[in-house]
Image (cartoon, rainbow, N blue to C red; front, side, top):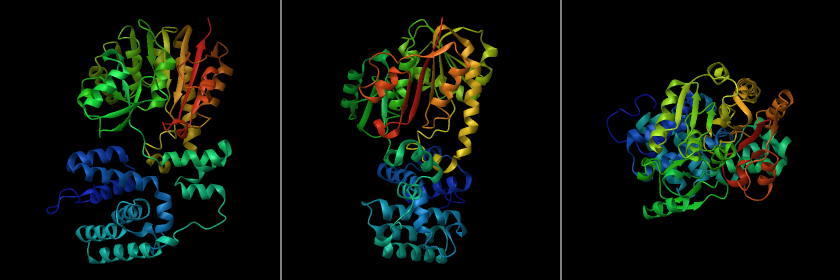
Length: 460
C-alpha cells in the first residue's frame, strides 16, 4: 500500500482507493498485481460488488496502460512521470473508467477521484485531478488515434501491447492473427475446473456444482475440464476444499493427457510447482505408481504437497532441486515418463497476468531459451528407452517452443516426435498438429492460455 493508505483513521477504503494503492505498488515496486490484489481484498473485506470493481480497475488499467498514458499524457502539462505515483495511478484508473466502463457514469468517476484526492492529498492535488479529468471529459469524443499509423503502432495502441511484442507477432502470424492475440489478451479470462477422476466424473461434478449454484459447461478443448459460466470465486468452494476439482486453464489440462501416464509408472515432473500438472498426472495414474515432483524453491515444494493432500493423492513425492541437476540425483533411464513444463517468458498467459506485457523484454526470450535448453540436456538422460518426454510452455514464442524442440532432436537422434494420444484433441488444426507431435495454441484459438506442447519418444 502507499504510505498511510491502509492504517489511517476515518473512512474505510473503497474499491477505487484499494485499486489505486495496488496500482501504485505495481508501478513503484514492480509488485505482482494478482498477489497484491488478493492480499488487499483479503485485508479490506470489501463487499462483493466493491471487490469486483477493484479487480476490474486493477486489471483493466494495467491491460490498457500504454493507451491510457498515450491519451492521458496530453492533459498533464508537466507529463505523467512528474506526478506523484499515487496521483498517476488515480488518474489512470479514472481514465479507464471514463473510456472503457460504460456502466459507470463519467462524471461519477471524476467526482469519486476528486474526493479521493482530497482525502489522500490536499486541495492543490484535488484541483489538479479535477482539472485533468474534466478536460478528458470535454475531449472524450476526440480522443482518437491519428490516421496512417504503421500497423505495429496502430495495434500496439488500439489493443494496448508493447510495440516489440506486436512486431514479433505481425512478422510471424500476419496482421489479423496478431491483432486477435492482443485483443484476446484483453478479454476477461475464463475460469476452468479440472475434475478429480478419483472422486467422480465430469458430468457428476457439473451436477453437484449446479446444485450449489455454480453453472458450468464442458470444455471444448480438455476432456477433464469444465468452464464456469456463473457462480463467483471457486477457490474456497466446499467441493474444491474436498478435492473434487482443481482450478486450471484448459490448455494446461492437455499436458498431463499428452504425457499419458498409466498406473504403476514412475514419472518425473521437472519444474512442478505449484503442482497442477503433477496432481493431474497422479490422478490419471489412479494413485498408483509414483510422480516425483521437483522444484527449485523450497517454499514452492509446500504448494505441491498441499495440492496432493487436498486431492487425496498419495503417489506424489516432492524433491527440492535445480532441474539442471536432476541427472545427479537420479540414475539414467529410471523414469517411464518425464514432463518438462519449462520456465518460459509466459507470453501465452498475458490475459491472466497483464503485468507481463510491461515487465518482459525481448531480451528475456533468448535468455530463457538458453535455460530451457540446459534443462532439456540434463533431464532427457533420465528417460527409459521407449519412454515419453513431454516438453511444454505457456508462451507463444518459437525460440522457446518449436525451435527449441527441433534443435534438441537434431542433437539427440535417439529421440523422435510422437503423435498425441488418439482422440485427445478436437477436430481441426489442433488435431493435425497433435498428430505431428507438436502443438502451438494461441489465446484466440479456444479462449484459453497460449500454450505449446511437444511429445517426444526415446527410441528403443
